[in-house]
Image (cartoon, rainbow, N blue to C red; front, side, top):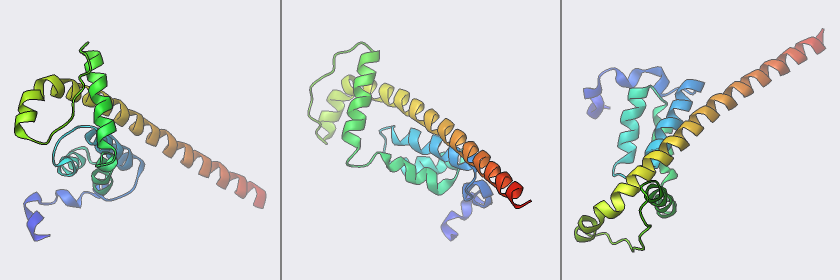
Length: 156
């Protein structure tokens, strides 16, 4: 951990490592949002935002892998189509090429709708995940309490 010394005591924050309703729901918010954003070093960004939002760090980093080599093409194409629809632009037929010339020629035509759609879908998905975790966690705790109460009454 010598290489992380520059972070000081930040990594000693308990919520970064513990599993509780708040740290887990924030991890889903961070990880899923960043998983929908086409950018390099998503895991590094997830770690930064996990620390900033006091979310579970390992879970935040793992959740960005919802966008992986298998899921990226359909996810980002869907995001592009949503962005193009919102901007009232036609959906372009294109074949992606990993070259600077292709990217520089197409960045405005494809990049703006792609990032707009990614921000919208990422925000919606992250908020739904956050609220779902909050709801499901509370429901589980309530159910466990009711079960314990029932078992205590049965003993008496």
